[in-house]
Image (cartoon, rainbow, N blue to C red; front, side, top):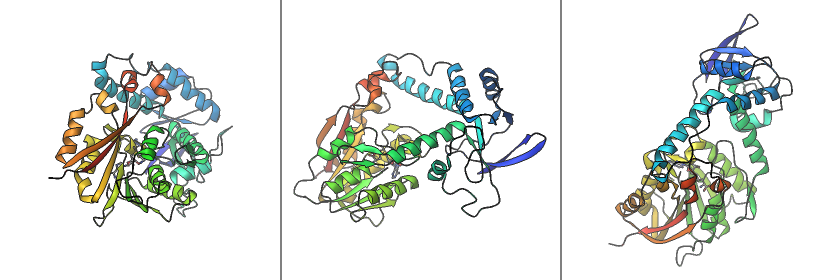
Length: 387
Ligand SMILES: C[S@@+](CC[C@H](N)C(=O)[O-])C[C@H]1O[C@@H](n2cnc3c(N)ncnc32)[C@H](O)[C@@H]1O
């Protein structure tokens, strides 16, 4: 964390800058309050200043919304099929520029993560969930205050609400509680695929690996289906903690072990069933949460396929769960995927497909609508090819 300084009422002040997505610390900070109009705030933000809000908390949210409305339309109209790849990159770029601009509204979190603004909510529990103990609790007395962007803080609050409420997983008959910065299983169609696909022939109680476990939802489904033992991995430490907590709540800690690892658990262990729901889109993640969505140059997918055979027991099977959205966006072709499977010495023994049911599919104003409307989610059953 870097330190930022600004002058307020003639006094020089300092705070630690915190940004979950690695946004650079503000170079220039202007103190503003309820008297600031949205137009003036937008001009300041566009000129590169960060606006430290000292007014009413609800007014800050309204200011954010008002600035958002003043920005150009989020994206161009839904393109023809051929332009979808271009449109996807333009859409991502536009969203990131918008987020950078809105992120210039910043507020102070006190040493105990409280906010000293009128009508401010108590965000201490939400911040502790996302950021860990505040500095005073962790014994670090060198610095008290933290400066964060308001959109990030609103994300922290929203994530905590999700965490507390949980997501009902029909296939589990239980709730899964996503953590801040952890891929949330809000789409249930891929979970149903894992809940229904036949287990490897002749192995009723398989030893399972769940690679990239996120909240642990698939590990839990497979434990419930009778897996003797599940070893779940994730590269995101928040996911590891979140999955462990979910296993605890589901009473599955005896059968599901969660470890932090880059894809594979160590010691060259083998499993009868290896499940992986990798990030579905080739692209660069810009935060821990996006580790669940974007896979730089399909590295996770390629390494999973490339090493799968070495981790399977003789009659074992790999289940790769992948949406074909990347294919519809022109980011990967079906032939490329099949070639990677073949190059890894694997063959496809079955494919189980389903149609996503999430709300965005019906949104015809979404610039990616043409791709989303054709999206299918596929569970690929893979075994080592017999020479
Ligand atoms: C699409 S999410 C799936 C999460 C969960 N399995 C599910 O189905 O809801 C992909 C997960 O892979 C994890 N991940 C990404 N790269 C990884 C890597 N190199 N090793 C292990 N896990 C990784 C992400 O942190 C994320 O939790």
